[in-house]
Length: 455
Image 1: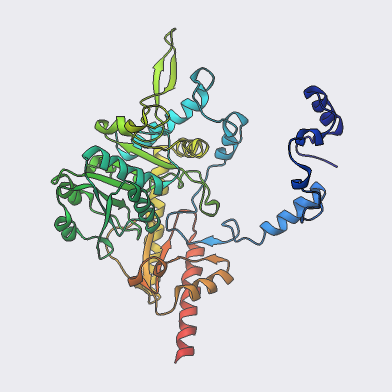
Image 2: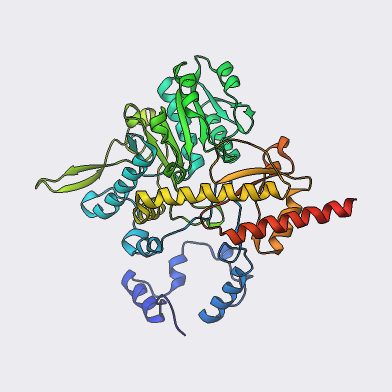
């Protein structure tokens, strides 16, 4: 039988037993009373050969609907984007995928440099002064932004737009509960944050205002108008942003953001059924000593050679617990590396080109949906996604599309009571004109068929 990894042989076991001075495996468990030891057979299938097991697992995997075989128009925070083939090649190197944590710089220069490059590229994309080594995902990054703002301003209220991803808002509320911080949602107006409502809600106890850019509906928020409202009350502006969109949009840092966070999933990280992904966290220089997680800094050694070290540690593992600004104890180094490799492979021009393709293809599909009789709900600039209204349930439409090897859009009624029968459609650079046309054709045919049945 062939093995991908060498098994432990009987001889290996015997040599280990002899090394520790015992004769049998049972002696390892001598301190455990006989009466509590399990003596029966496990209720699991008999072991299979590697080839049989591989075949069975492949058959099970084939039951999943993946974006290799299905055209996906499902976004809502996780997207089907182009991933340069070099990404998997680099992150599959053992020195990266087995690396634990770079506490010892003298033996971790490769990992530290990779993190440093990630920080640098995120800073350039967001227009912020400094970025950390990554967070768990976009949702936790936004929640950490709220905690940083509350600690920095000594205020106990967070305003978060209802146009921010629903799951991210839930994570913010969970974090805030333990800190006795009030989280209040800003109403919507035409798919955007209601600026008049925001003005009325601002007071001296607001620590930060959280805006998504582009927002959950794909609409581009007007940060230029939001910034003076927020800073006029002494609060911080926290922006959650799709990093790929920043290839086309003005960077949040240039529009007055104090904290910019998001998920690096659009760069080289597969959907993977929702995770794990890689959050990013970037701030202005005045907040750099309060950044959660790890920061890698550039320095020189005794001989003047360039080197990298962990620096400005603000978490509870490194400083007194009461002084820590976060209890985040890890980062997504491997996924951050994947994002770094993807950004490097694409470069500035490639990133801008992909962002442009997302805009152009989304506009094309929106036009085709309008021609097919669907109502486009929100107007104005948008990126990657748009919302349609239907008379039928979104689930019915998606079930029909799935039969045509198409993964349909997100049912907004699952997250917003006022948006029943509304579908959020994502169009990335991966979608072809043919796939878009088939989607429109199939969904229109389904609507007509349902309408005829009801008539």
